[in-house]
Amino acid sequence: MIRTTSGVFAAIGRLATALGLLAAMVIGVGLINILGAPPSAPWAGPPLEREPEPAPVQPGSTAPPVEEPLQEGIPGVDPGQLEPGADPVREWADEIATVVDIPARAIVAYVNADLAMRQHQPGCRISWATLAGIGRVESNHGRFAGRLLREDGRPSSPIIGVPLNGGPGIREILDTDGGRLDGDPVHDRAVGPMQFIPSTWRRWATDGNGDGIGDPQNIDDAAASAARYLCAGGRDMTTGGGWWAGVMSYNNSVEYAQKVFALAESYAEAGNRRR
Image (cartoon, rainbow, N blue to C red; front, side):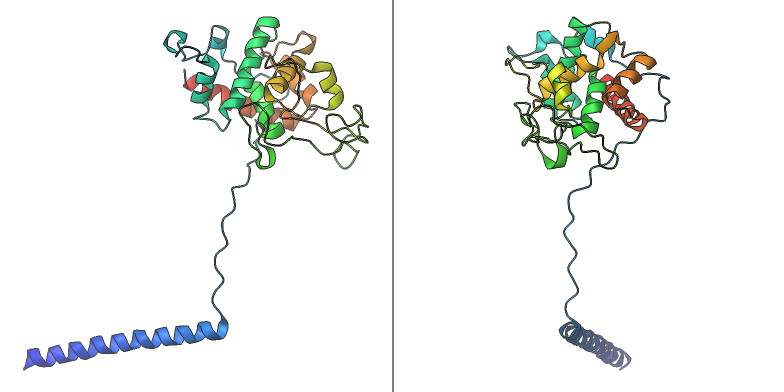
């Protein structure tokens, strides 16, 4: 009898629980009908592009490290083990691109500019990592505003900066090229992955990929031109004075140079880790 009674009480308890849950569901449906369904969560957009942090270094004090092995070749790449026709620079760039947020195609441009300057102006000792730091700050390596850097070295659509019209925080530079490069016949605009002003491009334009054309929208040409510009005046880019003078001639801002320094340092360290 005790078991029977306990079983009956247990069954009644389970029934009461079920009826309670059913009533709660009915009430919940009623509240939704009255108040409306809760709003759905919004889709998460792409992450915001993080602004580079400036390095805590003082102007002229020091320069980012340089990968000296680049003078002898590409670190970690044995040319004798490459497939016929393989590009050792691209092999190395593919490795580095796995540990830094730089397209391999952009790394190729920066390294080739570095190697070219080591041959034609060895006293400058420009580093691919410094060129990459500038490329990151200027256009996120040709990917500004969601663009893609294509295998031909050009962004998926031309990169053209704001008009240099003397607005807040902006220099005024009247048109110098009839709008040929930037499409603006009134004011100049910086163009391409390395953001050259048309008048500066006219002086330093370089054919970095051997196609016979100097194109500021092509990252090979732009990186080679930036390397020549930074090395102007016989600068040694491995010294504190030379490095800061070069980068601040590109953009006369201490914070800008500190951001480039931090990026160049991190890129060089990543390259050294892949040797």
